Length: 96
Image (tube, rainbow, N blue to C red; front, side):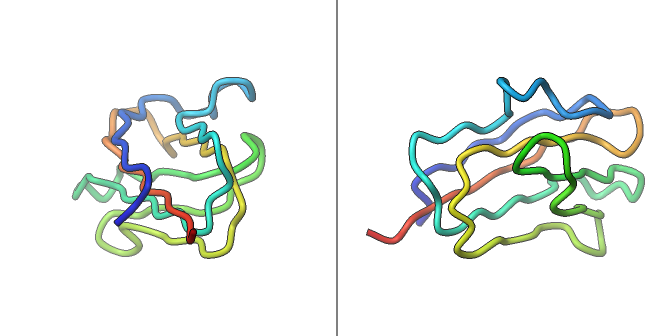
């Protein structure tokens, strides 16, 4: 079970300001899973942990979700490849 599970509406083709990630956790994760809730092929979502560099690409029907293990990350930034609006769920957890 994740320690954090939130769904965000992504509607921008650029990452938010560095001080305003879509997900900001008070602790470092051991695992982050990001799920693109859309089934429309054009609803491609990019994931970043620093708000600058792409760490992953969620493509409906091909790579709908991605999981990073042992990431030790606290922030997740999301953006779209093209204009639209997509629901994205971010689940994060740690081993205690």
